[in-house]
Image (tube, rainbow, N blue to C red; front, side, top):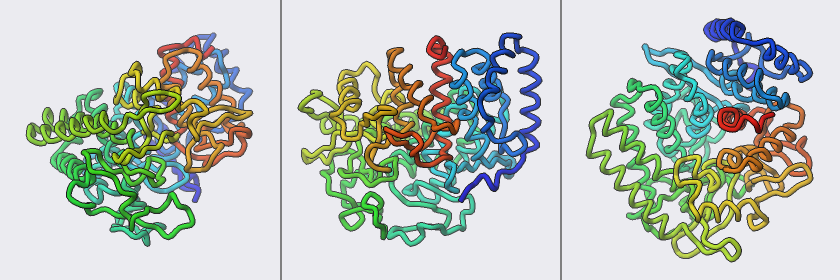
Length: 483
C-alpha cells in the first residue's frame, strides 16, 4: 500500500521550513543563487512542502549548502531529493505524556524495522546541534525502539498499533500483537544501541535512557546469550509457508546446525533472508561493537557496573571466536573474513548489499579500514570471486540473493563509497549512483546491472538517506569530487 496517500501536513514542520528559508536567504550569495537556478532544469520530484511529514531547519540548511556550492548539478538535485526523504515521507512524530515518540516506516511498507529506522535517522545526528526539533525526533525513535524490544527482542519489524496482527500473523513462531515480522537478526538489536550511543555522545541528553531502556539492554544481552545456544536451541524458532526458500528456516525452524563456540546465531540476514550457515560474521562483528557501546552507557548513565561487565565479557568472547572461526583461506584472495560460518569448517565467501555486511565493517567501527584481512576481503568481494558481485553494461556493484542475481544494491554502492580511501573509488561510486536512478531522482532497493529502469522499490527511504550521507561526507571531506 502506498504510504504517500497518508502523508499529512505538519504545521510545526512548515514553520521550521519557513524559518530555514529566511536564514538561508540571508546568507545566500549571488553565485549561490545562480547555482540554485541551474537546478531548474531538473524535474521537481520532492514531496511538496505542505505534504511533508517533518521539516528540519538543519537538514534544509545542509541541502542549501550543497546545492549552492557543488558543480555537479545532478548530484546536487539528487541530494536535495534523497537526504530529506526519511523526514519528508516516513516519520510520524508526536509528544506523548511529555516524551517524544517517533514511528518511522521504511517507505512502501507500513511497518517500523529496528534496523531501517535506526539507519534512516543516523545521518541526521551530526545536524542535531542546530535543530532542537530534529533532536526530539531522534530521541523519539530511541524511545520507540525501547518499547519494541520489550515487546519482542526477536522481532525485526513492528506496527504503530501495538494491537495489530498483520500479514505474517500465521508464521510458525511466537507471534505477538503489534509485531509485523519475527525474523531473528542480530543487527535488529545492534542498530538501536548504535543510534542511542551516538545520540548520547553528540547531544549529552540522558532522558531516553531511563529504567525501561536499561531493561531493554538487559533483554538484549539475554537474547544474545540465548542465541549462543550453549545449552540447546533456545526459545526462538521460525517457519513460514512460502514459495521462497529464503523466507523460511530449515531444521524445523531452528536453522542449519552450527557448533556452539561463543558466536551468536543469526537465523536471518539484514536483508531478511535466511542464513545458510547460522554464524553471520558481519552481524557478530556488529554485536561486539554494540555490546561495548551498551557497556559504556549503562556504566556512565545508569551506574550499573555489573551489567557493563557482562556486556564487555560477551563482546570479548565473541571477538575471540571471530578471530578463530571467521577468518578463512580463500584460494585467490588469501586470508579473508567469511560471510557465514558454522564453526565445523564450512563457510560461505560472499557478501550482501544490505548492512551490516563485510564491506561495511569499518563504517560500523568493527575493524580499521587499514586492517589487512579486511582489505583482502574487500578485494575479493569487489571482484568476480564474489558470486554476487555484478558486472554489467550500466554499472558494477554489490548485489545479493534477496532480489536475485544481476541486481545491484545502491546500499552496497554507498557502502563501498563510505569505506573507500581513494578519490577514484569514491568518485566511481558517486557516478554509479548518479547514472542509475532511472530518471526518478531517488535511490532504489536494487536495479539490474544492464538496465537501471528495471528496479525494485521506488520508495525505499534508507537507501535515499544513506546516499545523502555519502554526498554530505564527500562534501565535507573531499568537495573536489563533487565538481
